[in-house]
Length: 107
Image (cartoon, rainbow, N blue to C red; front, side):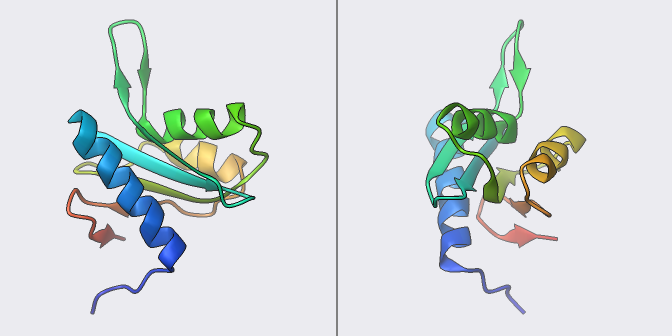
């Protein structure tokens, strides 16, 4: 039986998918802050800097003035890292929305 998501949660999964597809990266993420603003990002994999997509999206939100998050979505073929769950929890999110590249929610 398919999971029915809140429309706002579906939106951030779509944003994460689009970010991932646009740049051809392994991960795409999107977050929604306490005011409803959304931020999407991809992972960064440079020789001198490695960040997950969740870390980049959270950094964008915090640097734009967000104080907490309502939701975090990650689109990946893999699994979220422990740092992804930790940063989400630090900002008030109990669990990540994790989806495959086709947008199907896992877990």
